[in-house]
Image (cartoon, rainbow, N blue to C red; front, side, top):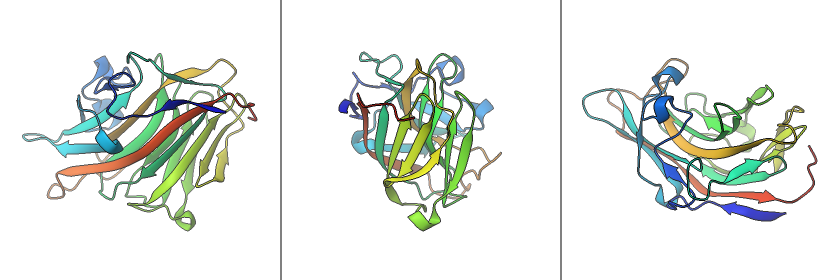
Length: 222
């Protein structure tokens, strides 16, 4: 397989900052999805995605980068393998994610995380249904942990790996002709399903995506 995408989180050719069709009217807010986000137009040197408390309200200025609408317009497609090295946030309310999106759907969640469930990674296939809440305490999943993610977008199975170990094969896949844009972001939970940031807690939350690549060209073993 060959690397067809190697993320540079400062690249204005690869990414659009602070605007996504996954948010109503392209943003900057998405209260209907239980997020306190106010999207930032800033890029993310070093892969550091931050949320900063805004004055005069309960919203947070949040980083979101997407390949949708960028000059290169990169899309993941069936058979691709996404690999990322990430460091999880420690703060309550921080909601990091790597996911895909196109035309109001085509969503695969490579991962989502909330520190109020400190060992839990949320992974989902919204294309054909199915998800898993994977408890990774034995694998070292905890606030502040650094580890490798790998996701195979197979036609018949989406497979997720952590540090080289298969944690879920959904046996549903994305179909032969699937394709979608990438999104990497941090949101802030509003307290509906996950703890929101404490009122007198930190004014800055964040996580790091140290690297993200997509490989293409091998057999689809899903």
